[in-house]
Amino acid sequence: MTSNSKNTTDATVSVWDLGVRVFHWSLLIAVFVAALTGFFGSPDSLGIHLAAGVTISFLVLFRVIWGFSGSTYARFRSFLFAPDAAIKRIKDMMAHRHVRYLGHNPLGAWMIFALLVTLLLIVSTGAVVLGGVFKQGPLAFTTSFATGRLVQEIHQIFAFGLLGLISLHMAGVVYETIIGKETLISAMITGKKPNISDVSQPRAVRAKPLVALVTFVAFGLGGTFGVASFAARPALGVPVAALDPLYAKECGACHFAYHPSMGTATLWDGILSHLDQHFGEDASLSEPIRAQLAAYLKENSSEHWDTRVAHVLATANPKEPLRFTATRFWTRMHREIPDKVFASKAVGFKGACNACHSDAKTGLFAPQNLEIPEEAHL
Amino acid sequence: MKNRLFVTFALVALMPMIAYAGAAQKPIIDSYLAAAKAENAAFSGFSAERGKTFFLAKHDASADTPSCTTCHTADPTKAGQSRAGKEIAPMAVSKTPDRFTDAEKVEKWFTRNCQSVLGRACTAQEKGDFITFMSSL
Image (cartoon, rainbow over the protein chains, first blue to last red):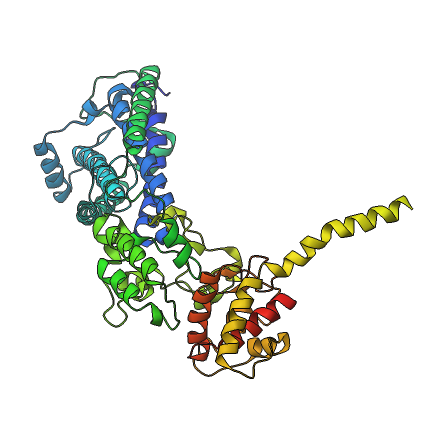
């Protein structure tokens, strides 16, 4: 680690230590990936989005620890400014007075805290969405789908807020570079700035990398084990029992045996009442078997579960109320998939969920378990 | 000499098994035989040839399923595929030995598929011809 050398005779002075610099550029990459997959990703980019989110969590954890154990300008106390100082900075800027700081200027300092807090809010709301909507992660055991959906909106608002902050942050860098003649970008690469007399004069301290490392490992491991143990709890409202063997045999003879949680009680009743006209074919069953399947499906219909599929497929298309693939949700999620993929031998038809969703038979449909077979593209 | 004796012995020992290959389908064939006689006094036995013609015929009851071959393919020794993408084991008894051994299953599928493809129930003679054809392959 670069220690702080505030030798006034040097032409340059080390400001940003290695920890700050590596943190800054790693965070930039992780946020870029998270934003790209979050705003523009297809359903199957959730895995990358989560990896980026976990990376951001660890980076922020490191930065917080480094804020108490890094070298002079990495420490939070070197850039704790009262709000007045930030307001004065704005007034100075408007009056074209440039006051130079070696570390963060008061406005920049507030931006750092705003960015860190926003990132924490985005990561935490992300965990709620993951738990409620996708029934994964540490909060899956306690978060309802409704909560997850609501918090998803908040997660998005924070994400847009972060974009706003990043824009201001970059505008600040442009302003400082052009108007203030500061070398901010090269300073974040080399760590060095031209030596000037610093108005804030923070007390020089050495970095304590070993303390930082031990603390990071302790919190990192503790956090990871905590998250893993919560994530291991049974998810709220997720079916775990295997399919009824009779249902799997009778319905699975011709098509993928749709998980009962995919249909409402109304849908299953509609299907089971008209088996002789089953999507263009006669699929009649003897009455005892039909009655047994009807009871099973009614007991396990979407109303009994809290998974994403149980909620989103519940809104039937009035024109074709019995067809999952006619629902608005299904149509929207599959709009980019060409017809030839569905017609391919590897898939067969639109209702062959398990051709691409490897966990379809459980009714979970995790975006990470989604892969269009390669043969389907030929 | 010793060898020939062994082959003869093996053949004799295998005979009940060879006979059994058709025997598994016999109870069902017999029940359709009785029904066919009751349907038609002039009925004189099932025919694999008629069964084949029936299997390959095209009907106009449904645009989606005009023929048995829509799902089972024209070669009963090959696996077919349901319209919903599920594989269907070959219909030929030589490929799928437990075909036509479960009366309830056989009736379930004749009921469904005759309705879907022909738009009517099949006669006992059609069913018997069909099974005879599938057992002859």
